[in-house]
Length: 200
Image (cartoon, rainbow, N blue to C red; front, side):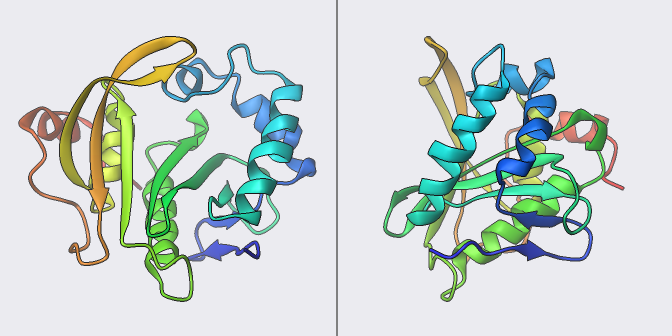
């Protein structure tokens, strides 16, 4: 699959390259990323190199694309988003964003761009994009909900992170779902959204 850049004029998504390794390494030092993402902790430059060489490149060669999120074309990496293939017509979305760029609506925009590409017949022609996050990761849930993902439940001890089993939430978006924010999430998420500043 050819590397396909995406943009809406506010966020730019393009393939991470060797030139991004130092920026990726720096971003992944923040404890909030290590807490919620299945990355090595501590995170080293060699880990970033392995990510680019062994995950990004093979992913684009197959059907699991990863994009670096940038604030302008050719700018430094401030986040990461990708689709992991589950089968020929389904994928799982994953993402992280540097703390300095949060609460601006950037990741919600990125998720919408990636989903549009994933569902597009000339993109990946997916029929389902799923999302999961460790229980407690309300910022990730807020992004998924705002991007139209429908809540599907709780998986007890359903994920493994660095040797530890953790509960996770499940949600998904289909090409027939209305644009977000999605209804039907449990009340606990309503309370969190009410206390979270609206994206700027």
